[in-house]
Each structure stands twice: as structure tokens, then as C-alpha cells.
Length: 419
Ligand SMILES: *Cc1c(COP(=O)(O)O)cnc(C)c1O
Image (tube, rainbow, N blue to C red; front, side, top):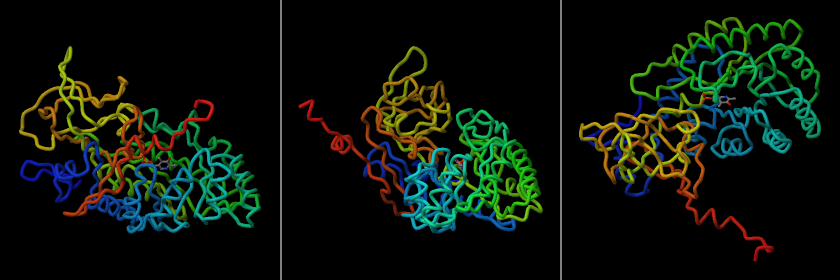
């Protein structure tokens, strides 16, 4: 459920009409609904409340905007970060360092040192090598790093190949059959406080059974590690729950997910940690864009919008579907290809899609663009960095400025040898 609805024939975000935002800020622009964000955060948190001890760390990479992080911090969320930059954002949003989890396969020495100084709550180690390096940094600082070991459960998440992370051929975590030995080796390091295991098998999962298989598998590993004499107090079950991108698609609800987790983890006696991203932010945003022109083609007409793959990369990267519609539809329909202005054939949002009839100058939206939308944006083709707006009832504010090419050009230098 979201708060993007038609009022008197005009699409609104909560009580604000999208044309008002387009007039003031220009297009393309991401528009987030605070009420939708809060609602999703609460639904997920309340569903997990059936579990004995829970910590939720929002996957910052899905939407790292400071205003978004502020809303989630106020709802009791911590952060799952995958870079030093994301960690600085979480801290800037007022999240307690102890509520921050540091994931990622390539944490640098500098990032780990800074994270230790900041006192972040947990490192999700991705390898023996990384663990040994962190142990040395921690000893140097005279501190002990709280850690879990990320395991690759070799489970097929049944999602797009580019967002699968839990198969043996993916780079993430340590191989399942070596995990117990690596855990024992790291537990012997004085700079580390090993306290559990972690996994994250992929994103945009449409079914619960791959998650259930992975959780069951890691539960067995947890028992083996305990039998070897180690203490496990935390188990991090990652993120990955998908959201419907097409009207009418059905996805597992947070309640279904929580019920499955409760069943599988019964008797584990740990604090369960979760790293949801898309399920919290996906439906909280739309990408508002204007039709530049409609161009006749060999087949269907090409609707050229002023948003492109640099603003919303998911269709180009993952063949992803985003529902598309007019901000002021009149009921007529047409079949068209929807593309952006970038000089790449992959700058295609949809082919042969049935859509509202649109014409030059019309405002349109791509729906469910709150996750992995602005966070993946670039300035490719020397386009603007897309701005972001948050709506709150009848109020709204720009929460990320449009960055224009002149600003980026100002950071470039012509070296002396070219003068
Ligand atoms: C990307 C990621 C997540 C969030 O994934 P969603 O599909 O957005 O829920 C959680 N944990 C880790 C380690 C990730 O890399």
C-alpha cells in the first residue's frame, strides 16, 4: 500500500499534486512519501515482533537519502552499510553507532579502522583474510570488534542472476563447508568477538522457500559451531524480500515471512538480525518524468521521457519492470516503447507496453522507484544528478538537490601539460 493516488484526476503524493512538484523542481525527480515509508517500516517491525529478540538494520544502499534515514532512525531502525560513505550517512542521520552493521566483501583497511573508531555494532565478515586484518586493526586500537561470519549457503534464491548472492559461484561470504573451521580460527583472535553467523542470499525474492532453505541450513551450522564449543548469540538473516513491481503481483507479506522465521528459528536462543532494504523503501517513491516527445517508429511509437537509465538503472541492469502511467490520464490507452534520451539501446524502460495515452509535455511516473532508484543514479551522458523530494501530508521539501553539469565540471581540472 502506498500514498500515491489520483485526486480529481491528478496523481498526488499524499496531499501534494505531482505537477506542483514538477513545476517547482523540474523533471526528472524522485518523489518519496513519508507516510508510506513510515507505514512500511512499522508493518515490517510489527510483523517481526512475534520473535523473541530482534534488531533491524535498514539496508542503506536501497535508499541512502539522509531524510529517509532520519525517518527510519525515528522508527528504531539501525543501518546495514556496505561502505564507509554509507556508514557516515547512517551516523549523520543520528543512528546510534551500535545499531550499525558493516557488510560487504571489500571493506578497506581505512574503512574498518574508521568503523572501529566510530564504535559500530557489528562487522559481518566475508572472509578469513578480512577477519584477520580486522583483528590486527582492532588490536592496534586496543579494542575488540564484534563480528559475525557471513556464510554462503549455496542456495538458489530464484531471482535475477545479477541480484543473487547466495550461490557458491557468488563472491559473498565463506563457503558453507569451510565456515565452521574459519569461525574457529577467527574466534581464537583476541581482536575479535565472534558472536554469530550471517547470510543474505539475494534481492527481490518472490518466494519464501529459498530463504527457509537457507535459514534451515545456517541453523544446522549454528548448532555445529556451538557443539565445537563456541558461543553464538546473534544470527543475521539478511534482507531480500521482494516487492510487487507490476500491479496485481502477489508477494509474501512481512507476516508470512515472520511466521516462517519463527518456525525455523524456534529454540535458537539468539538475537535475530534483519537487513531489509527494498521491502521498506521500494513503494515509497516514484520517479516523476516528462514526455520529451513521441517519435514514430517501425513498430510501436517511442515515448521519449526526460528520465533515463542514469536516473533509474534497474530496467537496463536487471530487465526490471516499473509500472508507468500518466499523472493526468484520460482513460485512453496506447501501446508504446518507453525510452530515455541516453545514447545506449539499453536506455529502454519498456517495450510494447500498454500505457495511458501520452503526448509531448505530459507528466508521467515510474512507480515503485524508492529502492535502488536514486541510490544507483549517475550523471552518465553529462546529465543532471537527479534530485529527490519528500512529501509529508501537504508539505514537501527537496531532500537532495539537482546537481547540474556545471558543478561537476567545476571539479575537473585541465593539467598543466595540456595548457
Ligand atoms: C543489498 C543487501 C541487503 C538488502 O537487500 P534487499 O533486497 O534490498 O532487502 C541486505 N543485506 C546485504 C548484505 C545486502 O548486500
